[in-house]
Every structure is written in structure tokens, then in C-alpha cells.
Image (cartoon, rainbow, N blue to C red; front, side):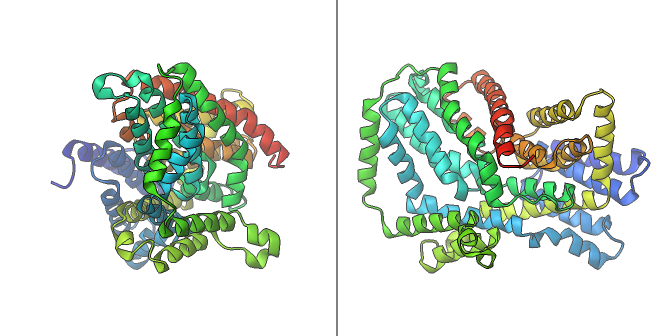
Length: 485
């Protein structure tokens, strides 16, 4: 059987209930309501893991085309259902995931991690900072936060902990493994918030903001990176300290860790051809995404972010650092393109059919009745949006389900468009801190056994509050200096 019966039954029941039995509210068209029924059923199936998200997305595309909720013309309906496959933002993430494969294949990702530990590894706290800085270095070109935190940084973290005899199997995780595992994980949401290309759902946030503001706000790679720079760096600076205070390691001095990292670097040998080319592509991507040629030479030298990603991938293919077989076997990239396209398509048509406008208005009316000003109202909306993630096992599903309506309600209540957009974008990543199922990275690191469930959730709640305070205070001041409000 290709699906889990109980979650599938629940998702189907929810969709059928909305489609046939729940009265359509005044001001909502039949097609908009039916699209909502398909959308909610899809999100319910994703949450319940009725099928892999890519398979569910194929079903969603099929249902949108067959039911004709976007058009009575069958040819137009299938074009609508497939329309998001031409979205450049979706290909930006898909191609970037393909590029990030070269970090693992060449060994450059591991080299960067061990290099930072060789510099800062004389104390356990320093190792924590080395892991966080490794995350930060890799984040701009690693849109799979799971690959970055779970496949690249986590093995390095485990090898360091093992070298000091800190192992869950021997019940010695308290020596340093618990602390390092939590730092390993909590660097992930912070770095994900700092770049559009640091996690797959960020371009979805960009698209939803643009749709909600009638394209008046369209966050570029450089605008996002600049806006998140100061709060992100402050968060990177404070996070290892907060976790050190919360779960202090038994071993605090680690003079051998730097030597261990240097021995690993020696074993890797000099930077090889593949690593050198990948490093060059890394720099090229950052330069083009940051818009440096356009700043120096004029707008004629501006390069689209997705075009930049294709340039980087083409260089890796032409030089043989990546082969076409590597690209074909990078299943996560193709999977992301499929499910991302389906969810973006459904969210887009919910907006085009007027459902998001109606839902935002309903939320606005409810919050407005509390008598809050725009500051209190937008804070309430952001907190409700963020902490609703306790009910989600996918950041993409959460963002797709709630972002547009909550952001639209905030705008209607008077929140300044760009600062509120940036806070909601940050919240879309901060929510990853909360649970052991919050994003793909969490089960990888939690599953390695260094923390108990209670310790993980406590650290997640504390870090969510710390990060929110940093973004609200430092972010607001920084954005004021940048002239964003």
C-alpha cells in the first residue's frame, strides 16, 4: 500500500467535510472554498505523513487539474496546476541543493568545519562557536538545512564528542556531547533565517510577501541577507553561551580538540582540485547574489539570483566536479522542486481566488476586537504564528498554511509592511527551535541520543524566546538605521 491508511483517511475526511458540508462564508467564491478544501486536505496529509510529500504534491496537482477549481477549461486547469514549475524561486532552491552536493562530494564542508575547530577548539565553548561558524559559512549555498546541520556538521560534532569519550551508549553524553549536539542544532534555525538560500521554505516566504503587498515588497537575496545580518550575528554570538548556561558540559577545557581537528585536516591533505573549484563557485555565488557587479559597474551587470545558481551549477558540471549522474541522484533537489511547485501553486491560487483576503480580514476583525494597537496586534499574530509550530512537523506546511493570512492581517491592522515581513520571515525559521520534529534536521540530531525529550523541548522554548527578543530589539533598531521603517 502506497499510503498510511489512518492519516490518509483523516486528510480525506477533512477535505470532503470542507467541500460538501461546511457552508461557504459570505464573500467567498465556490472555487475559492473548494481550493481551500483541497489545500487543507493536502496540509493534513503532510502533517500526518500519509505519503511522502512529493507523492502528495503529485496528487494535489492532479486534483487541482481534475476538479477544475481554477478554471472550467480542462486545458487551462492543467496549465494552472503546473504553473509554478516555471517559478524562478523554486528553481533557485532546487539548483542550489544540487550545488550543495559538491560540498559533501569534495569534502570542502568537512574541511571548513575542522578548520574552525582547529582555531577555536581549546575549550568546549570554543568548539560550540566553531560549529556555529561552520554552519554560518555553509548556509548561503546550502538550502537543505537538514544536509547542512545533519549531514555535514553533525558527523564532525559526533567525532569530537567521541574523541573525549562522550557517547550516549556509554551514558557519558553530559561530558560535552549534549551541549555540542544542542549547539549543532540551534545554529541551524539561526543560519536558516540569515539567507534566502539557507533553507528551502524561505523563497516561499518571499513569494507570499510579494503577493500580499501587490509586489511592492519583493525581497532580494542581498536585501534579506543585509536585514538579517545584525540580529543573526548577535544570535550566533549568544546561542552557544545560553546553551552553555542551560546545559553546562562536564568537560570545559579541551586542548586536545584543536589537535584532533588538525589531524583530520592533515588526513584530508592539501585542498584538491574539486575543493578549489567548489570554493571558487562559493565565492562567485556570494558575489553575484550580493549584487556586487551591479554595484560596481551599473545595473546592466545585474544577474538574477536563479540565473546565478544556474551559472554555479554549470561551472561544476563543465569542470567535472559534479556529473550529471550526481544531479540525477540528488533526489532531495528534485523532490523539493515537485513539492515546492505544488504548494506554491495552491497558495497562489488561494490568493488569486480571494480566499487569503477574506481570511486575513476575518483574523483582522477578531484581533481588532481586542482593542490592541498595531504593535500589540502584530506581536500577537507573530507569536500565534510561531508557536503554532508545535502542531506542525514541516516548516513548509506551516508557512504555506498560515503565513499569508497572518501577514495580511498584520498589514490590515497597520503594521509597517517591510519590518513586519522581516519579523515574520525570521519567525518562520525561529519556529524550528521548538520540537524534535520541527524540521528535517531535528530528528537527525535528536535521534543520535545526546539529549532527552524534555531537555530538547526546554532548550527549544528558551532559545525561541531568546531569538525573538534579539530579532525584535536588535532587528528593529537595525532596520530603522537601514531606513526600512
